[in-house]
Image 1 (spheres, one colour):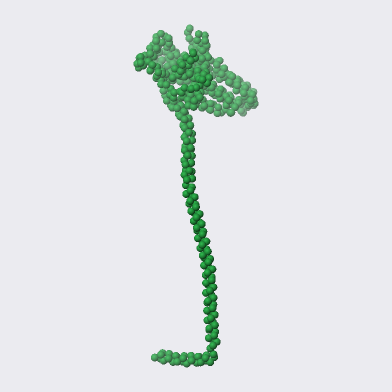
Image 2: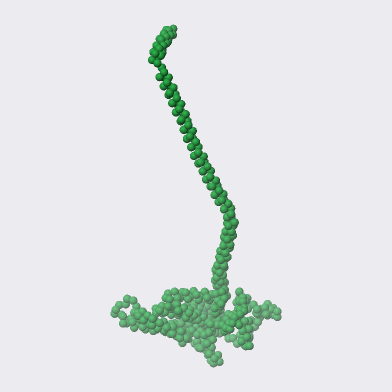
Length: 227
Length: 252
């Protein structure tokens, strides 16, 4: 069967056995768990240093009640970043290219922030629907617009992550195919295109990390508004 | 039996590949009974040696007796050639992606690897240094306490000298006091005696004066008027004679 460019995003299966579960557990397998030692090896030390710094920086603008979310947000960040970076290796499947997965991560977490806000501080939560100092004439329209923007947030979160990663992977496949084909036809053009491929690889690595961070940062922002 | 086999094979893989280490980590979290916790095997301080970043040194040592130095490389080349010629591995665009991603990873590791490793080592060293500092501080304070105690003991030894000096002081003060009082007594007695002497002198003097006055009075009262006239006439004749003698002396 001829492969199209979109077949890399199909859920992987081997002889009918879905491999998505293994793909989803890779971050857990590959990253070191916390040891009971006082002095760890380099990888564990670096990991714990990074986690401490990241958690500290993420939770700084949040008040004390928001600190309960530390574990969720940090582990989410590490999970998404590992999945994204692993997906850059050849012949790997990136679960975060699936819209279902990203919406499955975004909608519950966003909904949790909204429900928390409405339960604990309903006046403040509803107050966010009207920005400061709007002219009285615009109030009805603005409330409708703000409500729409509120409900579009989970969609935006999920689709942002999906679109970025899918687009990146697609581009890499396209340009790699172009280089592959051009090598026999016009080698100098192929060289230039391979330079483009190299730059794109760098971009994709950056995008992988940044998109994960943006996902978690926006969630913490929504939390800040509501807690 | 199969689980033991898997653990053994996982242990063999644990040297350098991250997947091997990850498998050991994952299986270790499933071993929760206390029997598997002790004795904990000590982890090596540094990872085992690898060649070209991923191939463990043990592989080269394994093949050295039979195939020498170039053995593993021939094995690698042969394997790759076999896979390519039999089209077990097809070169397509993913290969190019693998090449670019691989080159980026290799470049990053070569460039930033040593500094990241040094940073991780420094984090651990700082931990050790902090604990060492606490320990050294405790040892220093205890040594200082020992020295202070010794000094106090030496001070206690010297206390008897201090008491002797104080005793001497007190004895000197007592002696001085006694001598002062002695002086005072002597002075007082001398004063009393001087008074008596002065009293006697006064008495003698008064007696002498009284006697002189009595003698004078008697003498003056014994001079009769007849005697007085005769003495006055004699004095006048004497005076005249003297006057004549003086005048003659003056004229001569």
